[in-house]
Amino acid sequence: MYRFRQLWKFSTLQFHKGVSEYQNVSENVVLRGVTIKGRYNDLPNLLFFTEVCDPVENWIPFFSDPNNKILDYRNVHILSPRNFGTSDKHYSFDVQDLANDVVRYMYYNKISMATLSGHGFGAKVALAAGCYHPERTTGVFCIDYSPMDQRYHESFTEFRGYISKLQQINTKELTKSQIEQYLKDNIECVKWRSIFSDNLIKLPSGQWDWKFALKFLHENVSFNKADSIAFWPVKAGLFTGRAHFAFPEFSRWVHLGTNTLPMLKVCPQVRGFGHDVHSVQGDNNTLNHWIYEFDNQSFVFASRFTKFLSMYDGVHLLLKDRTEVGKEFVPSIIYSKKDPNHIYSDYSPAHYYHNWRFNNVYKNLDTPNK
Image 1 (cartoon, rainbow, N blue to C red):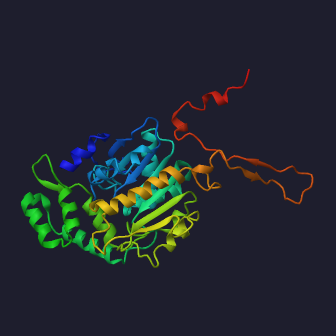
Image 2 (cartoon, rainbow, N blue to C red):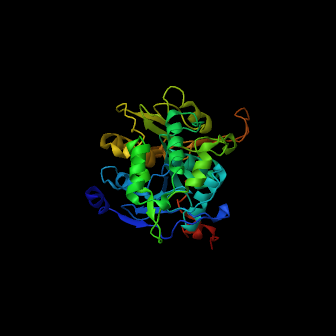
Image 3 (spheres, rainbow, N blue to C red):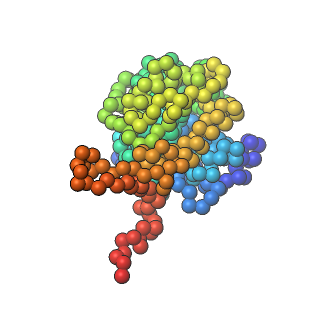
C-alpha cells in the first residue's frame, strides 16, 4: 500500500462510477476501471485491458511510475473486460462483442481514436477491437499474448482447473476466512490465489461473492468453443495497422519458437522478431506472466511501450517512424511510370488530430475562403 501512495501522488486518478450489473443485451455492457490523466494537456488516449480476473489496481503502479514515462505520452484508461472487475456482465465472450465494448466505451467517453493495449486476455480484447474497428485504432500493443489457440497450453489448463475448483463451493454459505482457506488448499499458484482473494466482495446481505462472473467464465473455459477466451477465431480477420508484441523470454503463454508466427499472420504490418516482436530477458519463473511483479522486467516492458507510443503509434504506414512525419514525401503514382505525358509528384501522408470527432479543430477548414 505504501508503494501505491508514493506512485499515485504523481498523477490524477479517477475510478469510474457505477457498479457491475448483469445485462440481457450485449450492447448494454459498460466497461469500467480507472483513468490516469497524463502529465500534459490534450494528450491522446491509451486503453489498456487487464488479464482475466486481474484487478485494475494491480496495473496502477506500472503506469504511474514516473520512471516509465508512459504518462508523458498518453492518458491511460485501465479497464476490466466484460464479466470482470466492475465492468458489466453478459454471457457472451464472442470476439466481436468484446470489440464493440471497446468502441462503445470510446464513444461514451468522447474518444475519437486511441492506442489499444492489453495483457493476456486483455490483449485479445485490444487486438479484436483493432481488427473490427481499425479506423478508431492508432496502434495495438500486446503483452504476453499471441493470437492463436491456447486452449491446450499448460498455463491455460491449470487456470481452467482453478475455475473448476471455484465452481465447487458456494461462497454465500462461507465466511471470508473459510473461502481463503479453501483457496489455500486448492489453488496451487500463489498469484492466482492472491487474485481470486482480491476478487472477493461482500454483498449488502453480508454474504461473500466473486467480482467476476464465475458461471459464465466456467462455461467458457470448460468447453472448447470458438468463443473461448483462449482461442483466436479466424473470423476476426486482420489488423492492418501498427502493432507490437512483447512477452517474457520464458513465457508459458507465448512459446518463442512457434507462437510468434500467428502475430505476423494476423498483423501483416509486423516486421518480425527484433522489430515489432520482442522477448524480454529474465529468469525461467512460472510467475513471469505477471510482469508488474518484477521491477527489472516491468521497466523493460515499459521502455518498449514508451518507444512504441513515441515513435510508431499513429504514424502513417508509408513512413518508417515519427521522425519522418512532415519530412519524407511519398511518390504519387497514379499511372504507370511508362506514361511519358504524366507528371509525377510527391505527397506528405496525412495525420489527423487524435480527437477529431469530438473537437472543433477542423471546423474552420470546412468554411469556404471569402
